[in-house]
Amino acid sequence: MEHTAQTYSEHRRAIWMLGGPLIASQVAQFLIHMTDTIMLGWYDVTALAAVTLGSTMYFVTFIVGAGFAFAVTPMVAAAAEADDEAQVRRVTRMGLWLSIAYGLLFTLPFMWSEQILLAIGQDAVVAAMAHDYLVIAAWQMVPALMAMTLKSYLAALEYTAIILWATLGTALMNVVVNYALIFGNFGAPEMGIQGAAIASLFVTFATVVILVLYGLRKLPQYKLLQNVWKPDGEILRRVFQLGWPIGLTSLAEGGLFTASAIMMGWIGPIELAAHGIAIQLASLTFMVHLGFSQAATIRAGRALGRGDEINLRRGAKMAIGMSTVFAIATMAVFLLIPEPLIAVFIDPNEPEKAALLRIGISLLAMAGLFQVVDAVQVLALGLLRGVQDTAVPMVIATISYWVVGLPVSYLLAFTLGMGGVGIWLGLVVGLSVAAVLMMWRFWRRSVFLTKRRD
Image (cartoon, rainbow, N blue to C red; front, side, top):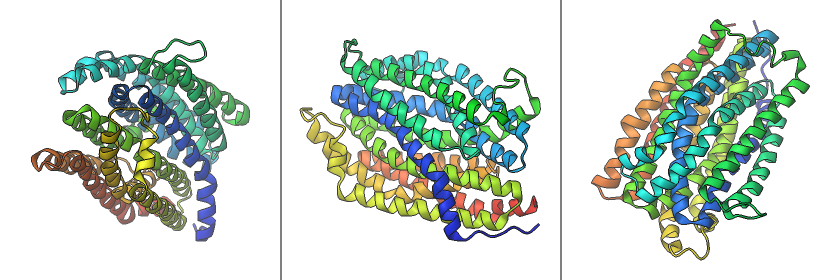
């Protein structure tokens, strides 16, 4: 079957119309987390170090379970392209089932987070504060995974504006609740790091409610909650088979950054706090690439449903190009004006401000180096997920980050004495290997699978 080839300009407009709200919603979602970091940085530098560890531990657990939510996107996109409303509903329902089951099971270790952090050599005071954060954040896991699944469902159907507005609304809500609970404003008790965890929990529940109500009202044809308790073994297996490699791929990358935080904690609390600031800034720019990646997944999933190889190729090239342009721009910002960016996270009266700035500037320079390769690897992952190719990318990610990246980080940081800069150079190496191998996988194999389905 022949397909009409869209021009590159048409692809650019389509990607931007779809990806723009996704990018903005990813940035807004991250700002919820960044608000915790900034406000806790103003509150106490030890709390900043603790939330760096605690949120990293939470995020690594979360991204594995989010694999099932990410699996929903290409499956729903392909089903929608085939006008199969029942399949859309079945996939979303089983995605929610798997997300809830994972969330209930894998938050239990948070109850022993202090002992875990002490066992891996973290400072006792920082470990205790991180535990205070995590025992509350644990209750956020199930609704957070549900929200991710609902966002995947709506995005695959190209209803991205609601994702943006819901995220912006809850981000603003998080600022207000954080301000009240961290510092004890508006008559609320001063709860510090525990207040930040409670605020995040509150806004996550609000997000789920908003997305469910919107889905029921705006997309009644899909009957989102119909037979919500009914098991569906066939679809459950398919979502699981596609989702678990995505989760483990995310674990491989997230685990690398978690290991980098742990190694930075071995150097010292000030270095860990500076690392937390640099990670926040690098992660903020990564949200833009993640939005482009999600748009690429949806466009690739629909091309797969049509068996449309030519538009898959053109759309992929355009998404990669748009993301790369942004990466080059952010690289320049990180290298040219790092100090004002880092200073946002530090109380002007903080006694360790000079040390935090000095270390943070060197780490942000390293973050600038991996902007392009980080963009390329996440775009490749998005395209591979769109054509439902997830198992081999999982292996590539594991090798790139754990066989290459992590040992290089340790070697440079401790054996060669480069400290925190060495840890970050290892991240650059691991991300570069992943970018090259995943792009090779997509262009040399996966893209051809679309034509075979025609």
